[in-house]
Image (cartoon, rainbow, N blue to C red; front, side, top):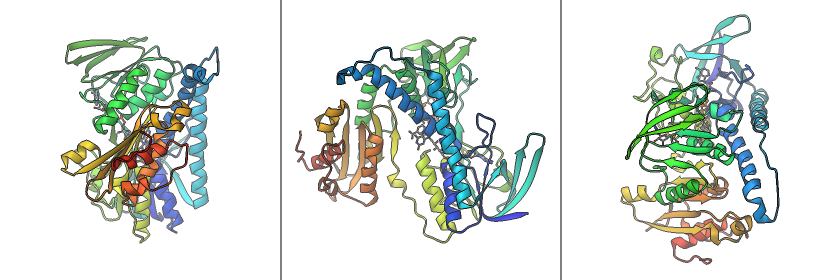
Length: 474
Ligand code: FAD
Ligand code: NAD
């Protein structure tokens, strides 16, 4: 039986990054992956590269260009007529990007001597894994041994009984990435990250989008002021967001879907051409052999780990969406790196306080650290500085004046406790906030840092000055 120092199960951003880092550190490493892509071929990259972060951002970018050309170009004195969309070309562009990136990982595996084992892994013990592979003409079962096992099996969409996904008219996030035409009426269940991002894609391309959200508050985990700004803007863009809407049932014929829901005014009905169900994701431990091996799962199905991603089984670790914490690609990857380094005897480190979040609507929503509401709840005294993009020269020049930067700093020490952005390129601007918090920086540090002019980052600078009531441009 072949034996490795480390076997990683799953090649999403948690698993493939962990495998590469293990191999870089001189450990003999294999990564088992069961993903079969749209061409029927084994593929690396997991949810993120195949049906998540990357394809969704490809469509967000394409739809942003379309919308911009159609609605904003004239303001710049650019007259464009006859703008049309070729949805199939947009989708094949997305597929091409996915292909390039997923193949890139197999190149990285080769370069780093990571063995890619194609098939489904089942834990037999804390040192033995069974792999079931499908070949054209036969199935195969093999077993391998490992001194250390890293589980990175990710997550899958949560289903709700009131809207079962058929991936024809009622789709999950994967189905919503490959419509072959723009639905005239699109329903979305869940005004979370996926609902807002994919709702935005199809709204920009011309769908009438209705989003049904069970909770009474919009983006309840986001700083209230930022969420309110975002809600106003997204509604203005045409997203019909209905809060406190509890879906009670759906029915479809071959052409349209009817959705029954209840809100504070009573029973409601909605008819759409396509319905996206985006109500969250759940950890994926299907067929992993957790029960047989005594691997501990919590009541929601997440693998139980300590702060170092150690499970209850010796030498077995778990990272990414399958364990507690935010379901984000960069969180999964950093956990993968940290655990690889610990296995190699180094002090692997993961700072859960400084994980950035980005929601890729336009403008984008990004934040790191605590919200104003969380600080209030924790009884922490803080000062706030904020600055609207409208008052920066660059945002004016770009014609992107919507939004603001908001900085929360400890009242006594001035240490930055949270930075929240709603604005153009917030996904890039948040990096400065993360670095500041990673270095335990203060608002004064940011205020004394020279920011290039004219840039959007000047809003960050001015918001930092604002913590001490000394903004210049407002
Ligand atoms: P996954 O990426 O889910 O990978 C797990 C892998 O394990 C899969 O390839 C699976 O086939 C494999 N596997 C499972 N069980 C077995 C087994 N028993 N044997 C062998 N292989 C197995 N996050 C962001 O940070 N930014 C974004 O912009 C973003 N956008 C998203 C958009 C969408 C539409 C979706 C659905 C998700 C998005 N996410 C985003 C979330 C992100 O995709 C996940 O957080 C990330 O993929 C988690 O990485 P992971 O390695 O833990 O798991
Ligand atoms: P989510 O948790 O972000 O949002 C789900 C929403 O659905 C919530 O607002 C919830 O209240 C609502 N909901 C739940 N049940 C409902 C019901 N029966 N009826 C109506 N509404 C209901 O989940 P998601 O949008 O599915 O995304 C899953 C995860 O994937 C995210 O939490 C995130 O971790 C990850 N993701 C990240 C990004 C990013 O980083 N930009 C993008 C997409 C996905």
